[in-house]
Image (tube, rainbow, N blue to C red):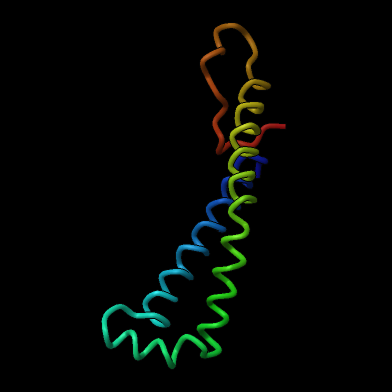
Length: 102
């Protein structure tokens, strides 16, 4: 897999993990409404909720890394495209990202 694809995949994985863990935490550990207020008094300090909160904390600190991965992916894709340009008639054609070139 090329550098651009790996970087985009990494960014997507970090973002998806942060989003999913936040959704689970909001739904299970701190539900909305008045009943959620009383439920969260018990569930917020439970082991599963603490683990989910730690996961949220770590993935959110990786957001800078995620943005760096996206930036590296864009630069790598542009570099790979520029390196593949050959004759002047190929100037507007980027390589097919599904095929592997050596």
